[in-house]
Length: 202
Image: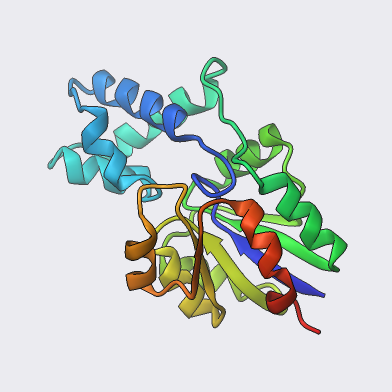
């Protein structure tokens, strides 16, 4: 048995528009207007940290409460599964492995996102970012790789003692992911299927 870890947003699902919509509404509740262009470079970072970055002095706790309410009650904004995600998860199962999600999303939001997307994974761990994702990954046996779109996912893989496979479906290109420490990069998740023979134990 082996385990492959995954980031969630912009790796398995594209929740970018729902995140932006909820954030804009939360900022407006607190009297601020923030352009999408200011938020996009921070995709994958805990949203309360993003709020502090783009609006210095904001009450991040109040913002977070409003953001979660808007995100959780948004039934109109679609969150599509990224191409290749379902095929890759099926291939991992067929090879005798398990897939786990470790996300910066709040636990309930991460679980809901996985359920809404119909993703077949063994476990979902929320509220971890960067190196702390590696702490969560170490709870699982024989982790062979962590797959993500964010440069901080490299820190997660290092902390877990496994390779980082970078996917260029988020805000970071191949060069940025390689500089961060990716051992391989792919343009979509379907290409990770071809890497399973070298990631899975013999």
